Image 1 (cartoon, rainbow, N blue to C red):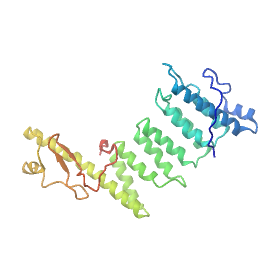
Image 2 (cartoon, rainbow, N blue to C red; image 1 turned 135 degrees about the vertical axis):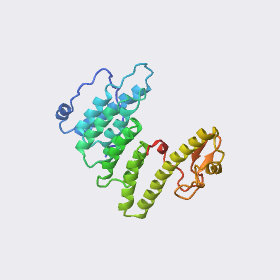
Image 3 (cartoon, rainbow, N blue to C red; image 1 turned 90 degrees about the vertical axis):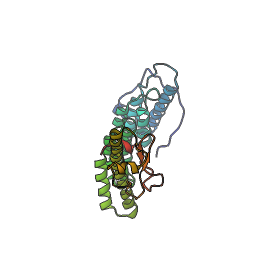
Image 4 (cartoon, rainbow, N blue to C red; image 1 turned 60 degrees about the horizontal axis):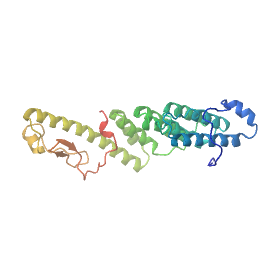
Length: 275
């Protein structure tokens, strides 16, 4: 395992002596791991010193070449792939703002170790966090979940990410498949709760539409569900799938789950999801 920290001379930001991984590999002979350590230290120094620099036009030009050399010398240098990808993806000025290079580095790691589910997951995380591309993120979480030895939480993460990205229908399908194929009670209960939350979100959209309709009819915001029932827009007080009544705040006219609902709290960003 590689858990390496050391100090050394500052990186010359204008020059990288050897940019070819295979060339360095040949020159390093049997000292690949040692030379990989040296380039990893230089990558850390370059990133750290550039990030702390007060220069108005600071540049991280050497970061990817240094990480590429490090991982060419030691293709199983996990921390260089994983932390290096975070450094590359970090937005400017705290990093170069290059999630594309972060993904390229991680794909290199996958080619070296196809059964390393962490690299596949990390690509999904970059799409999720830095690119806010939830569908693409889920497209990586799902294959990561199928790698032998991958943790159980990757499957629900795939479905939740799809919902956060605005695709409730796809998320509902995945949760339904999980419910039908679950081999333990925890998975089944989790799937049931998430399916109920998705249904509740659809209800909230529908009820918000009815509140807007009432407002258009009366030019007033309804003070209670009873007013909407009397207007013929509802047959009774609406309840969420867990049996708790939905809450109508009359001042802004916002509909929400009751604080005591078993479906609370809804997953972050799920409200933005389209049906």
